[in-house]
Image (cartoon, rainbow, N blue to C red; front, side, top):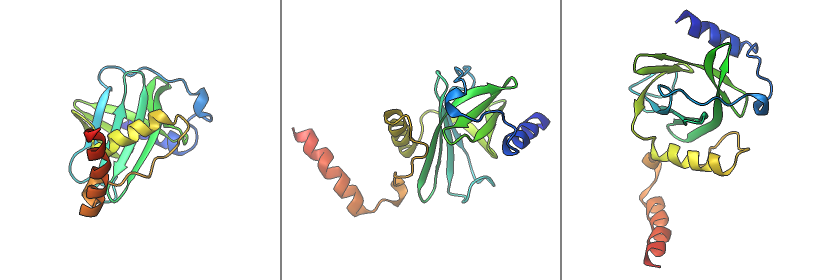
Length: 165
């Protein structure tokens, strides 16, 4: 725990030694870090008890930090090692340590557990991040829970038209 706090202090203090995203070496993720991680229950690191925090880590080391509540904020990044420890570096140059304790992952003030698949919104953000390798933040995805019946009907029409073709 002391190691995690020290790394957090270094990252927040600007001593993280990563000043250029392109120069940070993407590190393949070890099997225990690969996958979809998600918060469970209320957490002080999130704005609301209803908010969800997710971290997606691919085998190749690509990451997506995805938070959702009244809107979705997703930040693509990559896994790298800093002083022998794994950290997530977002394209905005935010450096956050990853500390695994048993089946839980401590990340950016959150406690996450592995889930089978990310939320629908985080899957959409992941696709957008893969299509635009320079995007730093994705904020144009409306959470499913906030969509009105009109929005849902409007989105269903093009899908139905495509299915008929």
